[in-house]
Amino acid sequence: MEEKPPRRWVRPSTRAFIQEARRTPGFSLFDLLHGYVYARWPYLYIGVGTGEHRLARVVGPIVRLVGRLVPAGSDDDGLSTTFADTYHGKVVPLEAAAQLVTVAEDVYLGDLEKIIPYRTARDIVLQNPDHIVALECPCRSVRENPCLPLDVCLIVGEPFASFVMEYHPRRARWITQSEAVEILHAEQERGHVSHAYFKDAMLGRFYAICNCCSCCCGAMQAQRNGTPMIASSGYVAQVEADLCAGCGSCADGCQFAAISVDDGFARVDRAACMGCGVCVAHCPQEAIELMRDPVRAEPLEIRELMARATD
Image (cartoon, rainbow, N blue to C red; front, side, top):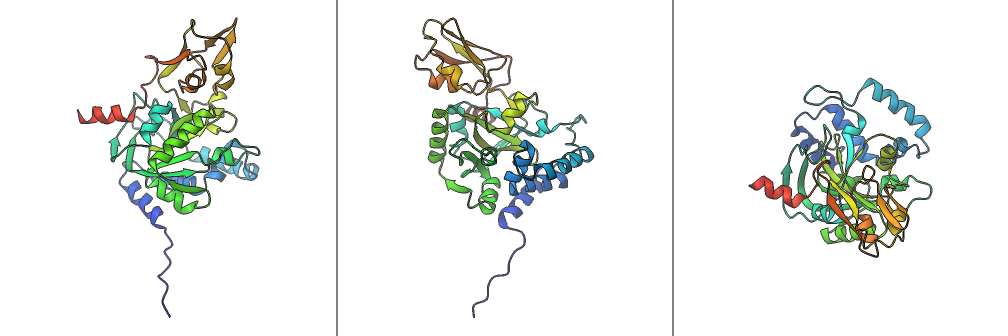
């Protein structure tokens, strides 16, 4: 009788995550456990955080208690950090999002302070960037009537892609870079916003692009309620008055409620606009364009950043 190989209690993807964590400066045991829980049970994690999961009433108070006993931490200057500092997104217009999922080489870009305006979790370290998994979005999945489709959360690079695929084979699938770009285009056509996500517990770096809607996305809802979890793309929408027909397509589709139509003319609330570019793509008159806003953090454009790093 053929002997079965011995069962390994720690899966290969978990070992890879642990090994990478050991190489990450300042990554604590608590961070490692936090990252494991977050990636292993994302639907429970997000569901409890948004109050949508059936266990939220039971687990929520425990999580809040742990949060008080074990604070998020502190940065290199000793300043305390909040949850929003350790888990946040950066709005990326379609072209910038497509760049992130079509990188052809490993990337090591650290501490992008001018781009990711948070004190922590702002590195881009892409190992095997062509390893991409389409995961059923936790935010959508925990909703009673979610926006569809569900598999629009793109996990990019290692060790994250293999970890998610190994633990969530029924909710995830391997995709090619071209398929990832197709998902990005399809989501923009639906009026959804692409966010590049960073998290302390995910080795303090970029790990995913999710395509978000204000009705399902926990981060967008937190932003709307005053918790700063999403950074602007660095652009702001600008309307060309001579071309605007006042049809309201831009206002109807704006996920940030940043556009209104007054006296037959679309007006942009610059403070509310996050520069996602959805309105640009959906304006039938081509009357809107994204303009760089020097007051905001710089855009996340991976090819330009890689070029700067080699200069």
